[in-house]
Each structure stands twice: as structure tokens, then as C-alpha cells.
Image (cartoon, rainbow, N blue to C red):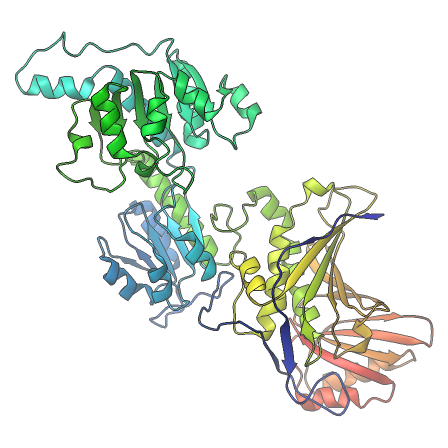
Length: 603
């Protein structure tokens, strides 16, 4: 077998672990608790995502604040799960005042979820749900730092937004809005409102995601020639729709119609400006159902006045609602609608249900396929990796509890053994859960998929990964996961390999995580409840002696496993227990003459 390259994921200063004066790893000292201190760490943000839900009213249900109108079907789902507070049109100060009592917040596009909002939540806010696609009204960096998951509803309003884009396209081409107003004003100006045909015209779709590709599909049906620009769009998907992917400059230079479907980011902000308008074909027509900020609105007014842009149809604006005296909105060659892209009965109900299900799933601790500030792992991959996620976290918890007091944890190496190709195994989620397992047992910080890498870096924990390629069937994503902590001392000497590394290894068997190696010892332990590890001289009656002690103290044993180096040599006994034994019980186990060392580990 061959090991793949190792990649470091986070570097910073040393993290220092400390234990209390007594330890469970020797016969003479007893304690079941230990803690860790990290340089540069802060206890200010208590971040939770994989959660036990709580509510301010003591009912045990989470509190969900809905700050903008949401479809009744979504509200009904939320009410079945938690306490729902529908408070619309909150001022920023009112939102900050309320948020400290909320486990989840659901918004549309108007509510600004700023760093101040996350700070005011005092660590209680676990999920922000955006009922729609765009998330530029949510401070993702702050959400990640505070460990708050942000989920959106990217599919339910796709068709509605695409249909509105096509509606604006046709209405603009045939001057529908202007002609309607003229007739209602008592005029009959047929010659003034002569339009242009769509057949044979070139439409450039700027952003070839879900909505953009649906617009392209419909425009093809209208007989238009469709090109697209999107640096991240797969060429095969574009070809399947009969769409040619081109550069940005080529798209804006050749298009008769431009339809905008890109997100608002620092890169796309004011992407259409005086310079880019100057590169366009004279008489171009622009449709925007994406985000207002992608257009420099003052520059668009200048381009309209100069005749460079013949018409614009806009559903979104930099500031919503725009000023009543906005030159852009009042321009005769502009059709304006009040952000109606997702406003169909069907889309509103679909978005409400989609975001309600995403928020409820996140509050239950389920992995969210629509998370926008966490590794984007496809739903089918999440399903396949679920038991390995549990294994990864528990191995991290075991490994860090084996480190003795005073040892500085600087480097952790994770090894994944798999028969799959390297590009067919996404380990980001597993790394996040190992980080969670390493940090949570020995600190007051709560780690999740959202803030795992950030938290590791802040606490000086460097985690590197390697892939070990195995021969065999790639049916299962992984054979084993091994966690190694280097350059540390251990409270349980048997956990250290000949190379001086604290090592634990596990695998998934029948959907259940198992511990399969501690140090150099092979074991087979179901990772449920808690574990007692004992290094002993291999001799008859040891299992019975330890089992009897636990039984006398009414501690239920769920399993026992013994791995040994040779008959009558050293052996490692792993005992699973359903409840933590009392210190006196552990002391009795340590006093068994053949037991050389032991340790109690909480999962």
C-alpha cells in the first residue's frame, strides 16, 4: 500500500494541555476530570451546531425567530418543532435585543444579519436560515467565527426567478410597461413603442448556476442564441443545453441582451460600470434578477442616457426599496419591479418548506447539504459518510484524553485508509469532526463543521492529513481512520507507539464506530458509552476479576475486548461501560496486581 501526500490544514502557536493533580492513569492517583488551556484562546464565543436544543422559556424547545414574511406551510413545520416568534420589520436594535433569546433566525433579503447581531446573541444563535438563494445580507465571516451555521433554500425559487427573468426580457423587448402606462394615460402611441424581436438575438447569461441555466433553457425555446460566462460552470452542462461558455469580455461585447445571475461578492460588486458599459454593443438590453449591487447604478443611468444601453429591466437594486426620486427607477427606458423574482405562490410555499426543513435539521444536529459557510458536501456524500463522522469525532475525543498533563499538543496527523481514488474521498467533514473531538473535551469552546478550521488555527493546533491507498473494493469510502498526536506524553503508556506517538485507530462495522487499535495493541471495541483501558499481564481470570468489580458496583458492562502481544505476555483489555464508574470503583480495578496501568475515557 502507498501513502498519499500529507497536507497541513492549520498552523499556529502551541496548545498546552493540563490535568488536575490526580490522574486515572496510575494506581495511586484518582480523578475523572481534566481541562486544557490554550494560548490566545477566548471563551467569549460559545459556539454550537451539533446541538442539544434549548429554549429560553424552559420548555426544552428551541426558539426560532422569523423576521420576514414566510409561507404558512413553513411556519407550520417550525411550530411542530419549536417555539416560533414571527416578528416582522424589526429595526437593527430590536433584532439585537431579541436575538440573545433565539436558537435560530430565519430571514429573507431585507434583514441584515451583521457581526453585531452575532455578538448580541451571546453564543445562543446556532442557525441562520436565508429563505432564498443570496446570502449577501448575512455576515458569513462573523457567522463562521461565532460557530453559527448559515443555510439557504437554493432550489425552491429557481424556476420562479428564471420565469421572472424571461418575463422582464419579453416585456422590455416589446415595451410592455411603457405602453401599458401610455394607454392608461389615454394615449394610443403605436409608433412610439415598436419593439425588437427575440428570435436570432444573442443572449449572454452572466452566471450559469441554477437560475442562469433555467433562463438559458427557456431563451433557447424562444429561438435565441445563448452564450454564457461563468468561471466555475462545467462545460459539459453548458453543452448539454446548447450553450457556449465564453469569456467575460466576449460575452459583453457580443450580446444583444445581458441577463445577470451572479452572486454579489467583492469580485462582482459593480461589475457593470462605466468601463464595462464602454465595451458593450451599442443598444444592448440588460435584465437583472440577481443582486442590485452587481451594477453601478449611476453608471447605468449614464449608459442609458448615452444610448449605449437601450433598455434595462431591473428586479433588484443596491438599496431596497430605492429612493422615490431615483433617476434609474424613473428613467423612461427602465422597467422596475420590487424584487419579485421568487414571488409566486408556488415558490413562496416551496422556499418556506425548504428553509424550515433546513433549519430544523440543523437544530437537530443533522448535516446540512445547503450550508453556505461550511464545506459544501453533496447530500449523497453526507449520507455515506454519516457513520464515519461519528467515528472521527470519537477518535479525536479518545486521543486527546490520552495526553498527559503538561504536554503541549502541537501536531495531529490523521491517516485515512481507503480503496477509493484520492479524488473520490472528501475528508473535509471528517477533519472537522476530528477537530471537534480533539478540542471540545478539554476546553469550553464548542466546535462544529462551520468553525473547525478557524478554531484549530486560533488554538495553535496543526492538523495534517494523509491518504493510504488500499487494494480491494471501493464499496466503502473508508477502511480505517487513524489519529496520531506527536511529541506528547501520555497518561496511558500503552497508547504510545514505538515511534513515540499517541495513536488510536477505528473503523465502521455494520454502521457502528469501533475502536480497533490503541498504540500497538489491536482491540475491537464498540465506541458507545465510556471505555476503561487496562494494560495487564495476560493470565487467566482477568476479565472475570474486573467484571466482578464493576458488577459489584452496579456498573453495566456493554462489551469487553482483549488484545495481546503474545500468550502470557502483555495484553490490553478494553471495557465498555454504560455509566461512569465511581472513583472508588476505578481504584479497586487499579489495585488488581496484574494490571500495570489503566485509564478511564469518556465518549
